Length: 129
Image (cartoon, rainbow, N blue to C red; front, side, top):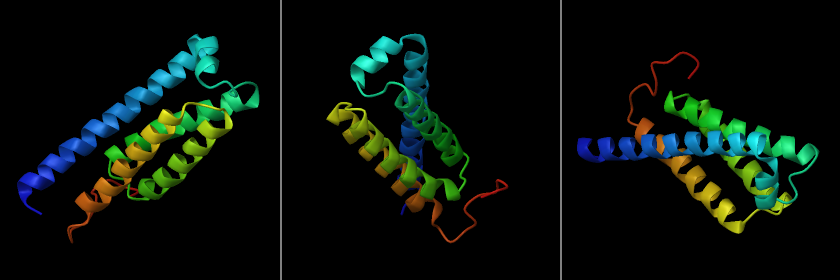
């Protein structure tokens, strides 16, 4: 992989991670400030499922931050959170387009770090990676 390609893919990853973080903050904000709007989009997100969907959104946002800081173990967690998010959207009867968005962003935020960080050098200088 050329240095230019590596930089471009790194920039793409950072943009997608920022979008994930912003989307999850927005999701939680809407759920907390306008629950009726949230439930209108996810009709089954009432009672315990309301809080379960919020926890899943928070986990996705926090995991994007961990990937930003190159915590290798967060890649595996990313797959689990992505699958949980897709299942949760199905359980609360959310729009299918949301599942497609989760699937695509999960694929990008899982595969790009694997491609970018595998170069024969240490993957991260951050502790805990």
